[in-house]
Length: 412
Ligand code: UD1
Image (tube, rainbow, N blue to C red; front, side, top):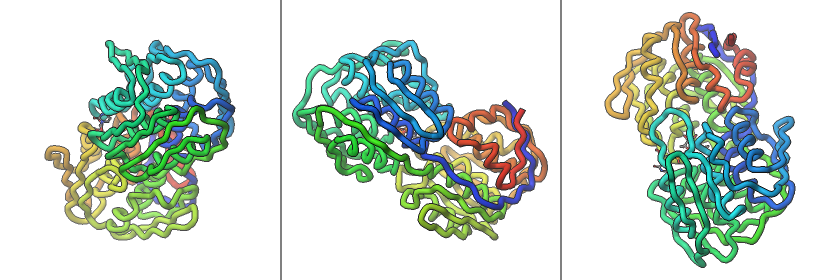
């Protein structure tokens, strides 16, 4: 799908963010463990979420998804969905829970965005420590529970978000096992997952810190859970507003989760945060050195977007990507729009302010495409974005929302 985006936008008005994709996906995967009907609200209607729901259906769960609410009823589950080739990396989160529910699980090796190799060794090594036999044969990952340790300490070699969630979820239902996870990721979506699991009867402490303690319970019961607001969606609209010199209210946020606000304020953003909304304005933009890092550091998922903002700031900015090895694809696209960017290793150097011209660009990854939209919205003429539909993986109702706040987008 192509989208035509008119330039010279001035962002105004209000927009609401949906529930966090990165909380919804692990929560949906963990819902495999429920032994009664559960209901989860504020599930964003996104391509990635629909894919996770399709996988759960393929496993045998009965699911309805209406008005952002998912209702799930566990049935007899199939353990082998290796024939279902998944485009989302979060599909790996099904492996541990499914193995415990069915005695043996086979899933296809997870896909995902084109931002580097994205190995799953931390997931698989953790499952092995939890007593599983795990093997990768071609494109299929297989796991079988072999023994149940009484006490186990697992130190993650890197604070991987997905591996923290996967191991925490799996260990939650291993009765008789006490698990200590060390060097955990601290993302707010992990805290939301802990809240979800504990309200079903799990006994997990410490999510949001680097040390998580889990006492396995025999089963998880019924729950109604509401997912937190999407901080990356909020950050994307905030950056768009600043880049355009606009004034926007973003509603539906979870204020305690916003790890981009300090950087945006240092770049000249005037940001006020209320109970569940924030207002963003900016006049003069300042240059900035930004290095992506695990939470509470600056999120890699906003790195392409902030690169565009840095193009509009007066002076030299340096943006360094430290989480993914191949997440600088937006640089080539921004160059097509006239940006002058120097890449040295994983860092982008930008001497601003720069004028961006409308151009034909291609979206290859979710967040890079979001950056293309921001660039196109503030360019001095119309742009065409190829593969625009990638945005539907992570931005709910994005065309409607953009048009409402002042970016003219027409898809074809
Ligand atoms: C999650 C987010 C994604 C975000 C990322 C980093 C979801 C659904 N997705 O992805 O939007 O960009 O966190 O904040 O929540 N790694 C390994 N081996 C592993 C696992 C990870 O080497 O077994 C490496 C990855 O290649 C990457 C880094 O660790 O370089 C971070 O990955 P991870 O934190 O696992 O990201 P995801 O959970 O996949």
